[in-house]
Image (cartoon, helix red, strand yellow):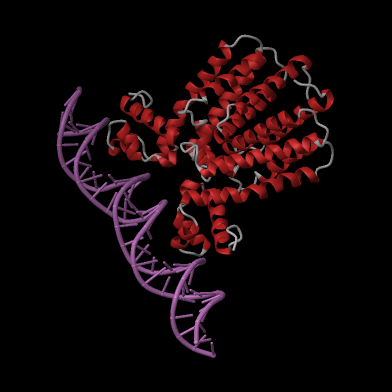
Length: 196
Length: 196
DNA sequence: GCTTGTATATTCACTAGTTGGTATACTTAC
DNA sequence: GTAAGTATACCAACTAGTGAATATACAAGC
């Protein structure tokens, strides 16, 4: 049985995902994850060699679903690339209003593990952010946007800034402002198609 | 004796600042802070009613020094507002290379305390970010930049995104890209002076 | 069909250390 | 003497991780 589809392992990762995202990795004990999964801690340690290993599995498991969420919002929006990107931010501002929303799990984990830069979970976060940036660059260039790579990076920066600002202010205006800035940058490139 | 200038209290806040920033608030015990300050834990609890209180004092103490750092970089740079803002990011990219750099303490604390949105330390972080945004809006408008408030918010978003991206990728290119995007947005307003 | 062997999967009970916070007593300055 | 400040010693709860036993699944031998 594949490591990824093992049902017990999946139950543990699902439980870890809910708890780690809701409370933060440092505030959730391994016992709590095992109990949430309806298993004992010893079983957890059979499937994961350490808590750090479990944290990395949690973030690895969020990579694809998150990318699909973003791509779904982009594809569903009407209009040009500027409107489609702005729609991602608008959807983000909407879901961020929900009381269960607690920011970007990748960024929060990196913040908690700042003292351990080589931690596998930080690397998983970096991979996800890179994947998102690459997907966005591809989506922009297929909409005939000049300098899609540079633009994608700028939009990622605005999005991570939106996550952070929303987390600290609890005010969706910041997310919408980021979306507006992203759309402005895109339109500047749509018109000119030359470097800024 | 004022609460802020009490020397024993200051020793404790200084010790907390170093440890909390270096390790993260969840990974530093109250005992460790007391020991770093050369005092006992009981003395710490005489001056602070809880660890949460100490965390808030740590962030409150960073507000002014951080603002002065940013303003210093801005003032010292040659050129127009675009160059001055870009200089802030360039300095950020420089200091972020230092191995002791561990991101923005305000954002990291908000990330750790995401499950406690009303926590006094999160509020202290929000106050600091608001102070910075206001200072930046004032600095931009005194350089004759149109829509300084909107622009200041966009730059703050880019900066928080730069902090986050740098923390997860450990690559200063992200910080410089954010500075470049900020300068681009400023120049767009310097030329046109009309809404985007 | 039944036993046995073996690898996988799970549990119970435990450890050694750390945590935030406190009860009590001592010291110093006025 | 008294009040502010500091220290010693302690607690009950919780932490990540482990040792040893057990349960389940499945195949081989007969």
